[in-house]
Length: 89
Image 1 (cartoon, rainbow, N blue to C red):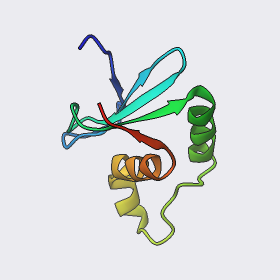
Image 2: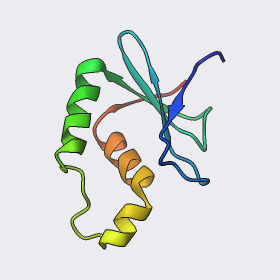
Image 3: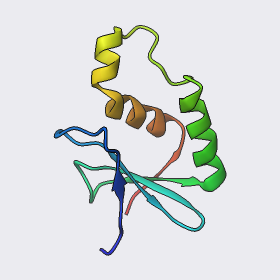
């Protein structure tokens, strides 16, 4: 259990996505369900995903701007789930 997952300083009281950086990649999980399934990304996959986030490629086109700003963890989690391999513990 000595894993040191990190959570965004932008996360709210309802949970967020947490990441754990490893030598060969990144583990990602939902902070509300730390014993649940995880995603694993290679370093290249993670860096590519972050570049896409920075470029605005994962914005929800139909969402109202206020709603989109209130729920970034859910948007990020949905994007992660659709672009990676699930790993069950």
